[in-house]
Length: 304
Image 1 (cartoon, helix red, strand yellow):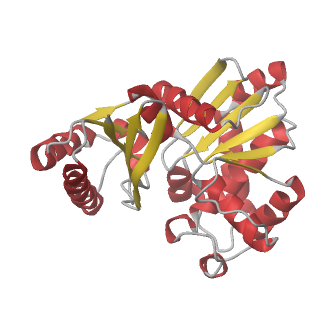
Image 2 (cartoon, rainbow, N blue to C red):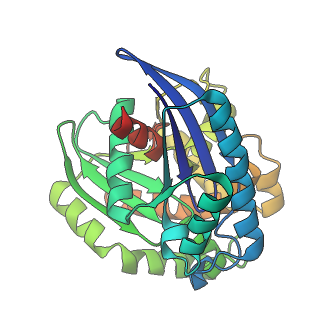
């Protein structure tokens, strides 16, 4: 069976085409396109016209690729930007009309469940862990162990939302940092309560920004690891803290020049560091692991 997975994120649209023959799973095609659907007015719950058109054009391209691969089944899932936008349904209707792709808007809870399934598939969960997925529109947290999902929650504190609302300085100043941290603290009170109760020892970062942290760590320390071919990566925590500090103290121009940061994440990576550092500190966690498997792989698991 050949399947196509489309993940319509706030920042990036992803296409994954895979084939299952017996117990073997082969990835045939992968693409990530920086559509920036949440550009401009995500906190006003509006997809602006330029972003709307970028999204449509991207999905036209995806539909042609899917046709070329002659897939048996397609599942397209929309997350924070589309589910919270006043014109999100208009976007879904236009996509169906112009490309034939049917988009399913999933809730934050469903998104967290699929992220868990994807991370589980990677083998990153080896004990009581807190999974964190930093998206452009929302951030998902999942408390789990090797046997089960214990607790999950989605919060509208994604990197694009916080950047548009709070990130006004370059490099980020203490005022902007404190505004972001105060907002995070206010939003995540129930997360800290559950972590106080269960005390997870590992934070598993689901793809996205955590792949950038890993890429920067690998390059800085000349590690012989290829991020594109691995399922998991365990950070040296001191290396992570060093990279995090460098990102927080850098200007936009300095980050742009760092090999390992894609243009889309040059500014949002600062927000990701602030959220990750705050959660690590509040939950007293000093082990950090990357899972390169995320929501897309969870959707794939649900199909096959």
